[in-house]
Length: 286
Ligand code: GTP
Ligand code: MG
Image (tube, rainbow, N blue to C red):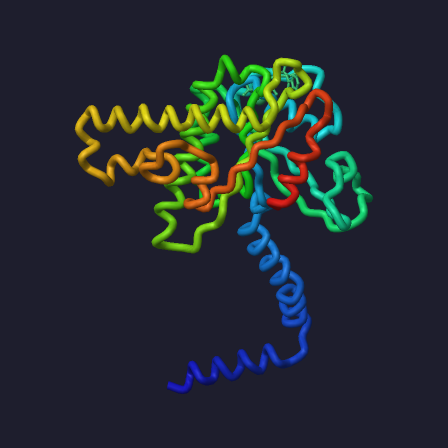
């Protein structure tokens, strides 16, 4: 009966008496435990927790060119049609105001530094899944930059607006489902009207008007498809694929505010390095 008690006593006596093995075990605990705790914490918060900005849009609009310019500070000699998403880590420096992307990139730039991930995605129709998934991922991007070729919009308006419709609708639905559970964050979308260096390029205001008109047409034709198939009688179903204010005659980006989606349209040119307005927009989202 007394045996376990005796064993315990002798054990306690052993560890409280200064001896070399006990001293070594004590030292090991003191030094190794913090290392293990540090490892566990850093493993759970990897650097991918950086805020991210998603580059998305039709093929050939200039997404990869923009990423390269912001990363290296000069224009890429050539880009290829992207096949897979790629991301780079960039830094925004603010010193009173937002510094230009060239200044921000310098290690010794004064002021506050904030890091973020810029994610480029392929524009080809068959490779869009990865980009669309990121819109609804748990770590949603802080901002979505939809790059369009302002000089080729006349020919590509239908396909460009089709892609934009899918993106905005996905974001709109995400807001709809989030309402019941957790607090929903605002989503910011920038439509970057690129290639304004070309004389055929439309100004940002026209890019906006044309896209709004085309999105309105798409909305009408998609809901008509539903009506024809008889699904239209079920209002919930019909509501599902309707972008913006339900039942409104004309579509405008302002309608997306109902769903906490803010849309801006700004012109620029990667070729001429005129991307400062876009950079400032990104900096405000980080
Ligand atoms: P995908 O990867 O296919 O989705 O295309 P992307 O959006 O990444 O386009 P990319 O950056 O590869 O650019 C396509 C072409 O547009 C390249 O030949 C660029 O040199 C050109 N380009 C990009 N920006 C500009 C610009 O501001 N002005 C002019 N004139 N050309 C540009
Ligand atoms: Mg690309």
